[in-house]
Amino acid sequence: MAKLDGKKLLACCANGAGSSLLMENAIKKVMTRNNIKPAAISHCAVSEGKSAAANYDVVLCAKPFAKTFDGIDTSKTALITLKNVMSDKEIETALKDAGLLD
Amino acid sequence: MSTVLQDIVEKKHYKFIDGAGLTWQEAVKISTESLIADGSVSADFYKQIVACIEKYGPYMVFEHNVAMPHTTENADGVYKTGIGFMVCKSLIDFGKDEDGEEKKANLFFTLCSANPAEHMNNIQQLASIFQNEPLLDALVEAKTPEDILKAEKDFPCEDD
Image (cartoon, rainbow over all chains, first blue to last red; front, side, top):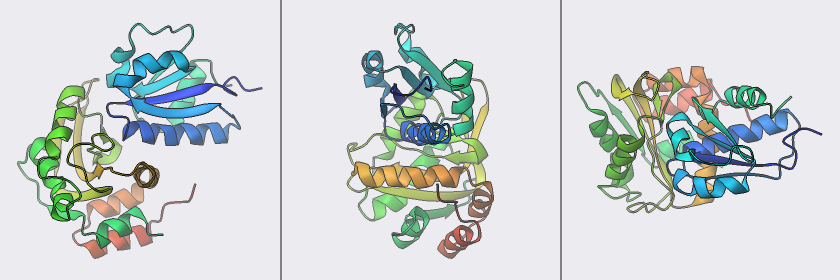
């Protein structure tokens, strides 16, 4: 079973309406390509993201928003930061680097 | 169903400008003019986009000089869902990002969203467009709405 099967992923951007949707789209591509079935892939604004983070296994955001997540429990929630939010290749690599994808 | 580029042409949500000497704030404002024209957004909607970029930096400027200025779903002053397309002859300087990399744009896809489902459909299509380099190269040369349609016909996005 893949590590991310049944896990919950959250994509965050400033408003939860632009880049986070691009990210969600790219995450879905990575999941399909690797035959992974996460329990949920959601998106929201960073303002909601920090409190929501605890309910997710992985939070993904663009680099400028990384500091918004200072203080989240990284033993429970992995934080992945991206340079190019719509790059499924970058997401795939980042998940592999984080040990979340084989 | 029409594609986002067909929709842009149909709704006259396009703008072709020279752009020389414009600040990014001015360029963002001009990119919303076609959306203002048919009542998709209010005349001062652009101020929210400018405020967001001022707060977080030019993270909405992507590779290949593509900018996707936007705010949030159901933002104040947004009445319809759409995309304001703009081509600038000159590159608009958005300053440096968090890594000190210069961000510039000459292709603008300015978003407004009043309907999440339509908006998600727009974003999915834009994601394909943003990764279709030959199409982006053709769009940046566009000077008329016909050029937009021709670019799409010549360099179609693959269906996912």
